[in-house]
Image (cartoon, rainbow, N blue to C red):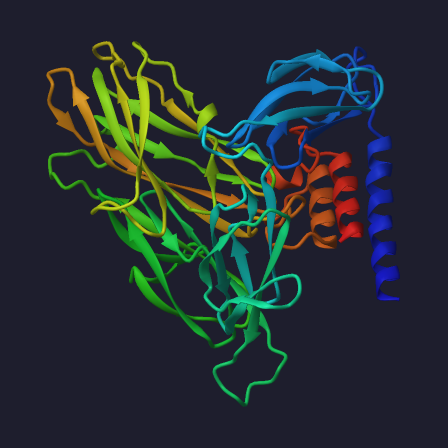
Length: 495
């Protein structure tokens, strides 16, 4: 009965949105009023790569679709619904037809190492019970050693990794698995373990979300707590900044960077704010006036996509070689074959070296040292250059990645060669890549009726308290419209 009422309400909302769409009457007589047609993109074999460019598109419109190969795969061609080849270019531009169309990006397995076996990788699926999250699943060759991670929420204990037969594989939350020659599923089990034996079996678990302003990072990004439970939250300050405080809205609630927070009776978001504090008193008070600065964006995406994540660089003087260390959450992967080098006066040669030990190594990150050599960026005297994406990294977001989480991307160990041969460092702002479920327009890590109403409200031009465009645009056509409403309704009904 509850499901019937739920579906009825969804259908009422959908009918209201459709009625609104039908009243649309363009004032420009040249608009044809033509219906958009769906373009569906697929990947073969599944997991070999990713695509972009799908969505609802007007017939006659030029559209570009792009295919990106995952590590160990190469792009072969695009084929239509009949299996006929239409292009061998990764970036394929064509004119949209008058009906729905499906294109498939085909890939071939191509291991980098000649000693690797000529076999296809197998899927390692990681599942979880209530009380935690997991990461590390994906496609791996037979014999590969895979790092797998289980993260219990507060109030839960990790019980163990179990295979598909229910046999305990390991009782260690962060361990390794040697890939066999077949598809494998491991499940992380968690047990609710309240601090007090007198606590009831049913408790309210609230979400604590942390955000970071310019000049630092926070941890944990998201955690779940019972009312009255405490957790220490951390604000990590970048070089050249000082910690200002923790804010709830515009109210400052603590000046301690490491703060023991007690959970109230509802979910809450706290923001760590930082102030620019140059080490040299003669330096100006705005980071944009430093000689050089690097900036990483805070970006949003969803599982199963590839995100173009740029390192933005602002030079105010002519420079030569550049060296820096890039660090990112190990649950993310970079498609290094498709890293884009930005426009420079003289092209750089880009090399990378993995960082696995030493004083700059952090076990919590995947780290690489990048060296840009042999090139130059020339700045004319007195001019102010625009912010330039010096390198753009395609981050591959796994389909099974934990959602409702922010994944850190940081940059440090910067060395820039000046025109006179001397070197110096640069100001930095680190970034976050936050992953939400497709359709989770309000960011509560659930796709439900509230997301439907949220998008309907946005389509009708009303203000919404929280609206995440990147995942509200469920059909990836870069528009928020009735098709996104129907798309979220479909997701809800299929859950």
